[in-house]
Length: 223
Image (tube, rainbow, N blue to C red):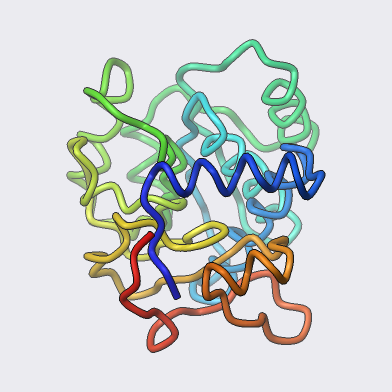
């Protein structure tokens, strides 16, 4: 399996939504479902705090929260900077309709939860981490609670960060995942057409699973 650099990962998204005709809503729904399924495979049901960022990574987190609710978990959202785009508004509305609370006191919720999902920034993020997200990452870096990172293991980005227990790579692993040292590495996003899957070295998913556990499946090729 190949690790994707930022430019290649962006080109893959463009091709999925161009040549292959996917809508961003479809990709986000399937990505978020795969995050939730990965969590359900490794962690017992309990309180899950999802820290949501302003972009597509945050959208994946909102979708994951809804599916976690249906899987029997008790999710809550920390969403400090909510965008005005209808896509994210609708995803948030769906969570609220499922009685998933949006909390204001991050530190208090970190103490109460059993698991944290970092859905703050994706592979396209660059530059310095600005308020309020610098404080969010600082809080997460100080907790002993297990953290699940969506697509990017925060410790290995340029940002101040935490050390995740699980990484769910989406579509294909990114270069920043090469040094991931947590216990669980999953691949999610079962939507890649066969021609692209062959080019990226993505193995076949088992039965009806929306995610696969990585280990020996990962090669050392870079793109």
